[in-house]
Length: 171
Image (cartoon, rainbow, N blue to C red; front, side):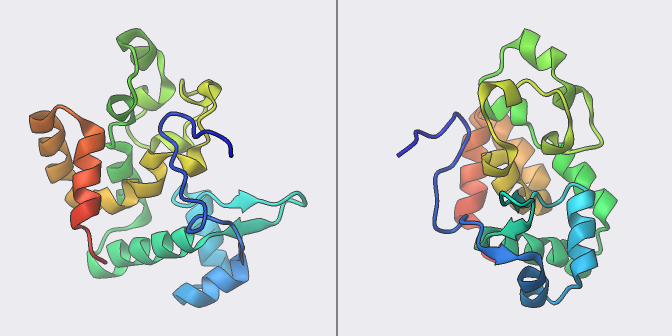
């Protein structure tokens, strides 16, 4: 079995890409074009099969349901969700050197989540955004961004703060 890259989670069953875009849309009550919009806006990263076909996992289904909760339940729009996700401190979750962090495009751009920014420092290290803990669990933190930032400061550890939010989150 391949060893996980830094920041990569290894939960294979929940993240196995076996669901087509049409099935995902049916499961969450959206149109296929709405799912594609989530993808084009950077809220969803599909797995691509050898033929280029989009495949999704059960984790993606849950992610889309949570995005719907943020939109319908809390009144956010896609831009609002994206900007909140842009606040997630990926540079703090990964042990980035100050020089690396300051040169990283994801650190400089505050209007997009790190996984939508090209030329970021973690990509050459072999970290695939779809498997990264910031992408996989970051959406769940958007509703509690103040708490995440507070916990990050008081705990001095972003990954611990995200784990604490995940432990308490029920949706």
